[in-house]
Image 1 (tube, rainbow, N blue to C red):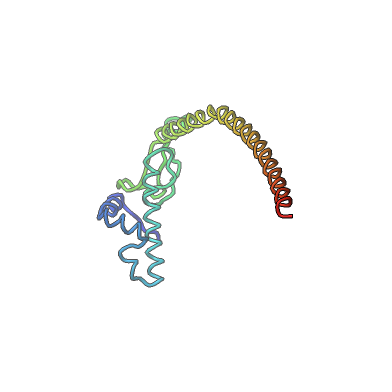
Image 2: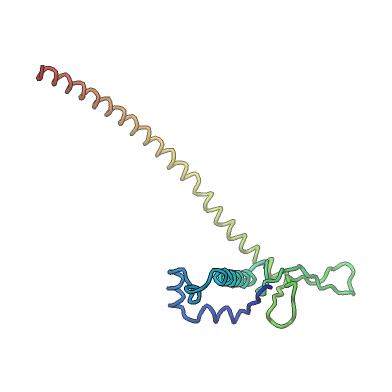
Length: 179
């Protein structure tokens, strides 16, 4: 059985005791979970997961092309046709499979959903363009750092040789002094 949530229930549940909720999140226990048997704890975990999924459905359904209704129902592509025109398909909607005109289920005009989705994609493309503009600068920094690493490697090799020469000289001096 799928538990159905209402938006008002979600808001009431999240705003009930914010300071206690933050503490319980930090500790990792709910009020009831601290003294539960394992079966009840699994059921509580499942209920909490369904609630979190429902919050995601609400957030998802308010912007762009929805994938789920706040009730948890699947979104279908509905075309409200007019019988008068045989060439025009009619007005399109993203509609909950369980849609009823009760305000709980979701029905969004297709144009609005697609427009918001295109705006989101446009912002992502602009962000990617900024990243692409930085690639040559990053490549230059990489080449400069590689050159520095080569120079430092040569210097380390040189110093290693000097340390070896000094250790040989110390060994020679020890032989002369102690023999």
